[in-house]
Length: 67
Image (cartoon, rainbow, N blue to C red; front, side, top):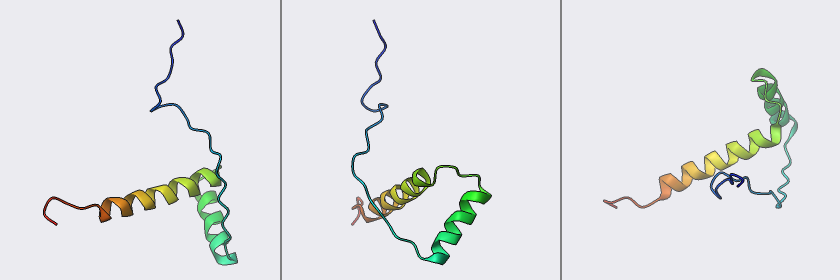
């Protein structure tokens, strides 16, 4: 019997494309950062940074017990 991965650890296929445009200075900063920290996969880096920012904001906006 094969061991199967749970839904939680299984990678989900990415099927939604999001395109962004950067100005020259933003692109320069991104390129320098990726070179400095040896980031080879810029798409993954931008995706993770975006999701981290969104989740942080959602956590901040969530109601608390004493609101």
